[in-house]
Image (cartoon, rainbow, N blue to C red; front, side, top):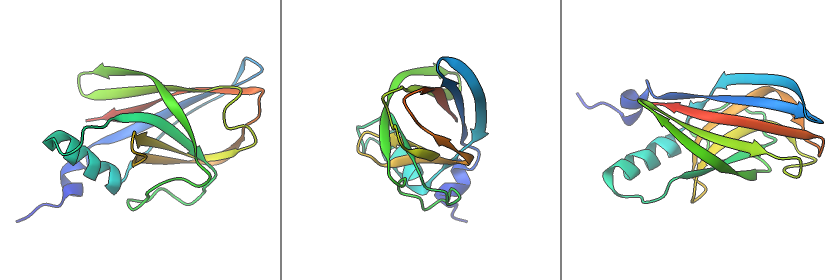
Length: 147
């Protein structure tokens, strides 16, 4: 019996946490799971096998509201934010990021994505509510992937 790639990686999952500050005061902490999409699993397989030399190096924020789906390949009206640091712990990796007061202003953030350096999406998360990003907001966050 041949197993599909998704069957092997179904246990691989992740979570995204956002801390939203307005004028330096914490307004909201939001943590939820994400979906590791087919494009991300394919790129990871190539990375493990030596067929890709890149890495995950950015988070994207966008305005799309469609539920996360395996076939997702990007975000709507994407603004990319660089990963500020990476941490490793036994069977997980954490990508830390900061959406600063000068980043993504005027964007109604509804979706987030984790991206490889070549802009291939690895995973996606859609929020239940919108973050109306303006220069009085700063968002710190992390994206964890559990292996």
